[in-house]
Length: 240
Image 1 (cartoon, rainbow, N blue to C red):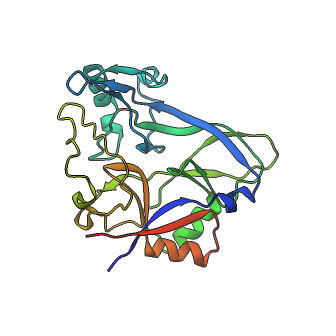
Image 2: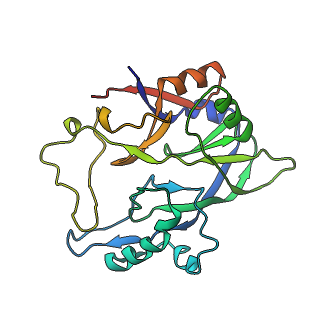
């Protein structure tokens, strides 16, 4: 039976490399103002760095973060849907394209922005793939380095594919808005994964109804430890 682990940043390990970066997404869907639930919101964790909007005539409409009425948000979402992975939900705030910004120093074999954006050095990605880790898609970044001979850092595109199990969601939690899809769930203290919803063709993914959570399989954890890649913590989560 497959075991699953919540990934997080090992701050002590990444601090030893004495590098940092400051970057933002090139394109993104606007936030949405929903007249039905009365909330203006945008998601976190829905990121598609390999989706290129540069050939889209309307790409300028995705360059400035802002809220829009839900109808306008929905119009813009349909413009990018053909470019996104099949079945992507694309909530308000979904980001596209490379991270753009500055970087300096040694980021180590991997680097985090918060606990939900993960960059890997190209050689790190290749070593994980050589270990048989499935479903890793590395997308280019556009980081301007303050040094010669900088490393090539890639961002992993991790699609939201699994779900939290209903057993860890409070019974009085309001259901998602039927118009805009907003689900105002606070992360449970003891998350449980819905086993039937989890992908079987990859070893790293996000949780669909809480996309800031990055989940790795036991296979991924063991590969990270064999390769002695520092910077990641692992917390086992139950699945049922």
